[in-house]
Image (tube, rainbow, N blue to C red):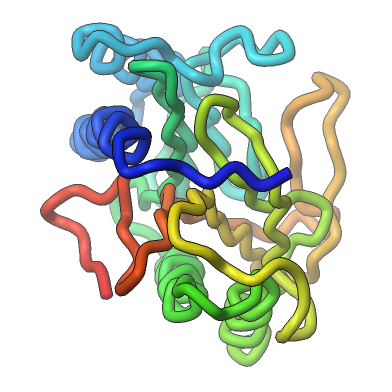
Length: 254
């Protein structure tokens, strides 16, 4: 069942979203060659707790970190630890915060130092595909209109769209209905309504869409070993333009 949020609930979720955006701003400044993913995790947890929130991910089904830190061919759910970032890597950071009874969730992919043109383009297209989907995050469109826009934008540029993992509703629970694929034919699924809150998160690969889960039961990597990027916001459907709860003032919106 899709939970429609009231204006009061969305107001509460805005605080969780603000904290998630602040985590991303802070981590972005810390990403450089030689930094470990564990250090980034500690930075994230400090920002979350200092703002009176709880990390959404830590302990979720046993996940050990406050962030997912996924490097290069790791698509999502990378476990933070002792791995040091190297010049030319890319790293996807996914983070959630829980405050006032509500979660917010967002992801970004960052370059580590100077990266190749191919890596920079992957990050760029992944972010742009999100904003293509966002054009359809308006009352009256169907959910798969968002999915189709993301797929078309990415595949038209030669990238693979992950199918095994999808976006989701978000609110009192970190993962709520509806599931939100990043692919599919338009004109299908539930019609978008004012008060829906959706975590929309393209996961885009340099190669094809196939992925696998490593033996740690968390880390998802591309099957062909090519790199992947991830971009996500918590989005509110309104009577007008969509509202991005996890967007900082330094980020571009519609």
